[in-house]
Length: 465
Image (cartoon, rainbow, N blue to C red; front, top):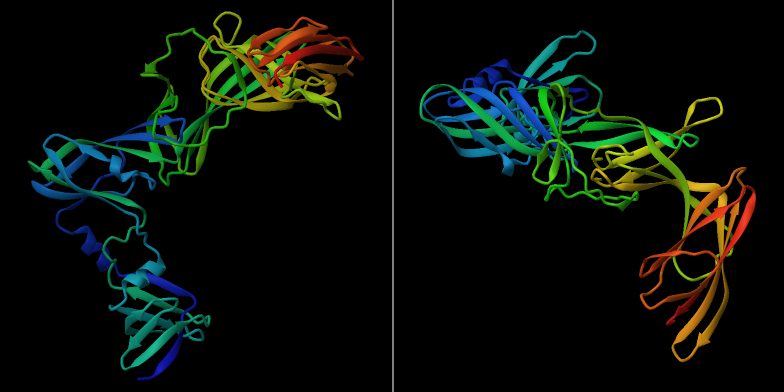
């Protein structure tokens, strides 16, 4: 036998129409029809419950029903199909996708038709070939010779007699059911899928002069399941059900958890946010829906500095700009806040809103006191200094700290200065401004600083080390 090279670019793959007819007529196989009445419950952790009510045409006995329009990221172990008079025997999720390479792989050992086109005349010539291998290249047997498809730019296309079994144009769920009677059966297909989730995003417009903010809350739906859910009833669940996984990074602070409640619908320990109307959630799409709109909620801009240990700083350190507000019914937002990102804006001298910072919050009950760090202050700084440290007896030390708070702003400010890293037996023996021991390891001072001025705060600690 002779080994020859056969040009194969472009390699066009065609499928004989008889193959399609043969597959459509396979006994016992029915389509799951199009999506029916779809309801989608979407969780914060990127997981969703899909419930699809359809009408299935079944024959008496065993039927294999194929659902090509389920999520491509379906969790097959969560699938249930229920309906009167039918019972699940077996289910499969086929994700071996139909591609030119897969077609050729499946054709190894079988015969295909090669169609060669004369580039000068356009005349086509066909011949049968047996596929011997498709490992990094295609090896064919044509009569008594062996040929290799090669990238020479000459037009050759391969025509396959039929589609191989289990190759799908898209991932497909197939369920074998045992039907008691022939006819049309109302059925519900349910499953969990990742890659369909929602997040809460908030836009806050803060007015420092009025001590108030306007805030809007938006639900952002993201669908990357590979499937569009048409005209779906959509329910959002705020909470963190077990098993969803995911990494959470929450840097916003809840100073005090709220204890208020309202009439929002609950599901166990979670809150429900149903969308008012049905919506189509397209694949590869983000969709935003408003769920919160509050005007003139009380809010206050403050400054905070936390010294993590009793040590000196070589340079002045910027304080944190913190926005404080409440989610209470009286004097607050009056609602629960699902976890998400709050982006804060302020109007400039021209009246245009400008972005000043953002931070994330965790799921927040109604009635909570919130402090949201939006960034570092440019003009308000603190420098810490260990003034003295002396031994007191065998196991005690006396440490005097100085906190120099500076304000380069044209108006007065109040800075919360906190000393962390204390122990339960640490005593404050002297302080230039009365502080509050908020916990065993933390003391806080509210330090008023005049415009374009400085204030020196001192405190003496009696410590074990």
